[in-house]
Amino acid sequence: MKLLNSILGASAFLALATFAFAFSPSADASGYERGGDHHHHRGGYYRGPRVSIGFVAPALPLGHVRVAVGGRPYYYHGGHFYRHGPRGYVVVAAPLGASVVTLPASVVQVQLGGVTYYQYGNAYYQWVPATRTYVVVAPPVPAPAPVAVVPAPAPAPAPATPNPGPNGFLPGQVVETLPTGYAAEVINGIQYYRYGGNHFLPTQRDGHEVYVVVKL
Image (spheres, rainbow, N blue to C red):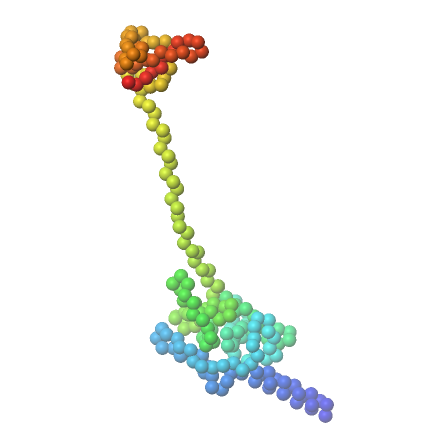
């Protein structure tokens, strides 16, 4: 009698678990209606417990499909991937490269860099027309914001070098002695010495007479 009760109890538990993971009978198994390049969601709702990565289910939900990625078996249903574990079937992150035919109705379409992605939870998919499947891809990296390039300021022009005057003398230059062949001139009451096109103004420096080249 105890054995019969145990068998009945286990059967009831499995039936309840299977029911918890079943779709509503009104939900379409395909999840998408395809026509050309457009994909239209169709209604359907999930009556089982809310699942997330790490959730352990005692049995796989009805309608699951087996997906092999890198030789490892996964089970897919309703946007979730399962792996067999010691206590049942564990919900795991979507494996890169996994290919599925349908996505949940609540999937979000994302456009990044001119590429269309389909996001469900933390997983991103891309539609592959050749196989008519959705393939799990790495999360896209947003393009960096453009940075304004500020041109470097132009270097300041070098100070102009004064052009030497006639006979190679520069205005402001101080000479100790006058060149040979100079001539004395008085201009506006001031004594100058002229040599070629240069004029020299006598002045004192350290008690000695020197001559400053001036431009008149």
